[in-house]
Length: 173
Ligand code: ATP
Ligand code: MG
Image 1 (cartoon, rainbow, N blue to C red):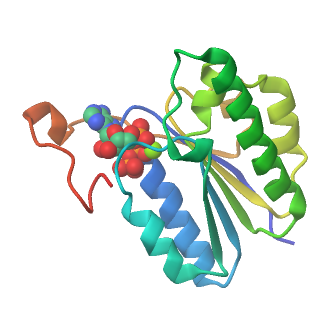
Image 2 (image 1 turned 45 degrees about the vertical axis):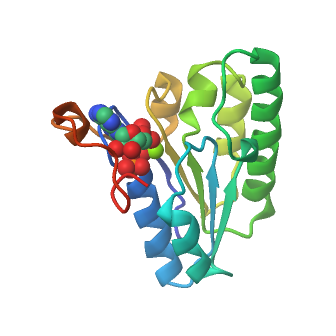
């Protein structure tokens, strides 16, 4: 019986979302079903959106919050959208259809208290046996780290942005 892990990619360095995409690819390569949910989307057209179309039937990709970035000037609306997005994720987790569920940039919803932490941790703990959940984003709450089986903190040693190299297609998006 495979042991579904709770995995967290956090920290200030680059590589969290791309690590989660790598795991999704790896699972899909074995014919295992993946649900990849992006909680926050920047303004770019992300290459992964088109790349996963080539894995149709294996990787279900969803951008929540209707594809915009959460804005803090309307906290109530943000919280409502956060709940809606989380409800969707709960459905994917509970469906039992997926070997892997990725909650990309989910840590921000917890960090900024858009969702109550304990019920979210309960859902993660109660996921179907054998299901792997990957959570990405900076500022992973301590309790999430404590609950996880695998936590990697990306450390920003160098980033091209600080030497004036702008975000590039195929690298950042
Ligand atoms: P990626 O999607 O490339 O794996 P990430 O998920 O680790 O990056 P996020 O925190 O989600 O990073 O931020 C997304 C964007 O911010 C990326 O374009 C990334 O290059 C950029 N970024 C990440 N870390 C840094 C940093 N230390 N300094 C400046 N920009 C950064
Ligand atoms: Mg990311």
